[in-house]
Length: 177
Image (tube, rainbow, N blue to C red; front, top):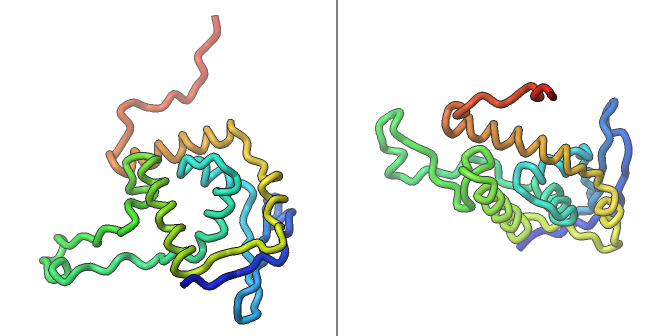
């Protein structure tokens, strides 16, 4: 059963020199407060990385990501006994990571599965006082910046998976007649 962390406050503003963002403060069951601070640009990155479009879902993902299990999956005994250099990590039960996925759709499905597992087994961030709609309305995502980030993510993923691009990206604008 997931531990409930209730949102008690949100802050907006400069979180580092020249970087605006949000802080979401939650109250843990033991009475301690937890402050999760992230740049506003995180919304655009999650949209670009996982093809998410709904600011409500994106914020939910951002708020639950810190509680993911980041340890690599355990290797089954038969793989542990394999000769050196032959063993491979066990498959993640939720699917490929962002960099291992062969498509944005595969990355999205796996990440949604990981976040659902966090919410079921570890931590469920709740908003009893309805503070999050302020962030939902003022997320600041820009479609052009999301598109540029998508190109970056897709190019990076492709080069990691396949070792290079089939053609060099166009870096200059064509001259006008």
